Length: 177
Image (cartoon, rainbow, N blue to C red; front, side):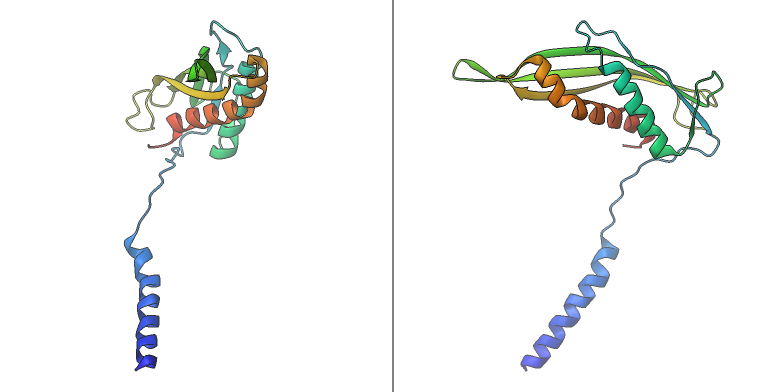
């Protein structure tokens, strides 16, 4: 009797191992860049915010170029003959209080917003070669301890800011979310 129970248990486990994955389907669409697109131009992302972090614009521009170059396999160009063109500017770089504890500021928040302009020179309407032209704001907030200076916070958060914003800009352009 015990041998039969073990035998059936093993059969049920094996059936679950083979059938369950067939029932569950996860889809994480990364979007497809049309084959007609060969070149992409990424213009310098200027800093037009009231508070200017002088390193942000060049570093963010470079992070976005690296992200797009490594993820798309398309040729990055500097000329005016690109199939896709990305431009934009840092429109907000501001600090605010994020949390208060015992009548004291416990944490602060840095908010960075980038206005992105995307141009599809092959098909601006996006009917045959997607996506269509668009403009959009991408914004991310980063909390930090209130006991550190703004300069220390910028230094600590720099890598996270660059990664999060370049990922978000990339996703807005190339992914079907």
